[in-house]
Amino acid sequence: MKLLLLFISAICLSTTGISQRAEAQNYPWCAYYGGFDDGGTNCGFTTFEQCMETARGLGSNCQPNTQYQPPTGPHRSNKVQSRHPY
Image (cartoon, rainbow, N blue to C red; front, top):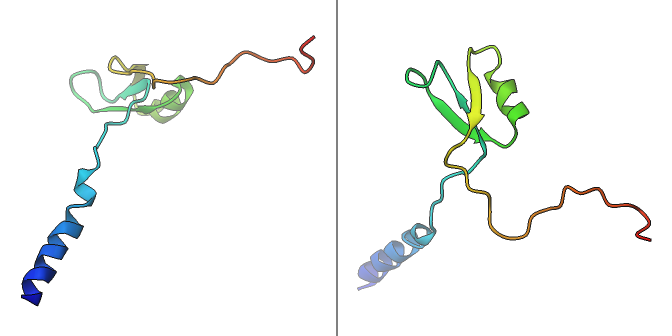
């Protein structure tokens, strides 16, 4: 009976981590290695400059990620705020 209880407890504990949803990474820039059909693709870059630094020297190029969707919710403003709002 103790063995059965231990076995059931182990199953419950091991399935606890499975309930979390996996989501793909979503970044706006992709590096295409070796052309569009021949090589691989890495869509893990937040800026064009970051993508080009990785692709430079490999004969690769960077293009916008066509699957990119910006995160929902409030976004940080890029507007420069003055020190004195009057």
